[in-house]
Image: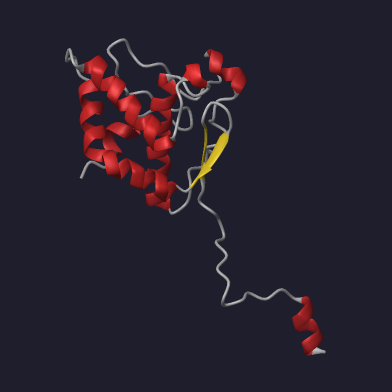
Length: 169
């Protein structure tokens, strides 16, 4: 009878790893939702971290170099997430900067809690209908100075995660 019960009941096998909650980051690239390993994205950020940190600081400043630094920041962000510009079917500049902010918030929450934030990253992904800039957009527009201090709508008000969490060292 015990042998029969053992065959019916599922057993945890010691040679099979089953993560209880897969921590896969999802984001909208302008055409579809992309599922990405957050460690791969984080490594891409670390590869350009010092440069990204520098251009973000300059872009947020009143420097005459701010517009060029903002452009350079967008090039780096688009490379990290493999994004196209809006004209090529991808994301707007604001959405690309917001994606970096959102990802940094996501990784910060993973580090703090060991689990993703309460708001799913897929729920904040803009849909094709929200690309026109309606209230459902996941990001806010940047200021005229080229600031990247935009925040996503997944949490309460607070500083941009990019400014405080960017891995520059």
